Image (cartoon, rainbow, N blue to C red; front, side, top):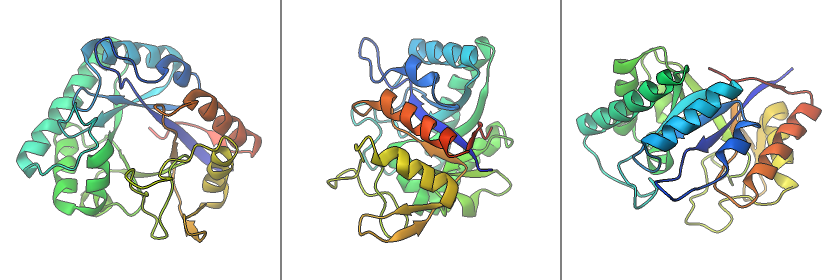
Length: 250
């Protein structure tokens, strides 16, 4: 039987601005990637999401980012490795401290947006992220793409592969850039089908129609897209109907 984690990005509002329905998604997912204030989120939002996750038994992960609130962490940035390591430590420690006051803790780390894509191909930036996790708590897993550069520089850290039910893939197994049309899959019937294929067969259909091998332990569904909660529920239902066991990886 396949065992799969369902994760989503939460806490991505800021001040009076809300993005997504965190509470509804927490009833669906098994792991929550909580924004740590650099691309979105603030201390109050972080605390609310952590408290709700603990109440529902959802695993908390730190979604760390470049310092880029205006660009939602999706802008490519060149940050010196020592500075990036320190900024990852800052975010990780902040969220973990808040989570612990609510009876939980940070159980894994996932880069966000441009940082996520950068560490998939850039060993220098990847090592900066790994160094921060290693310094804070080497028992924390890193959640990233299969074949990411993080796998090569992890140096004793656990690296967990994930795939995206609602993102388009290139024939090489990379994510299609959000600058390209069709990068996000919105079809309410296609997304759960893709999730089942990823979990059961370990494959995904690329944008050119070819089949790409994609073995992963966690499937991400985005919480900031239209109809995200209904889509997440349909993914969870489809996986359960296919005999997939749903369980957090951390």
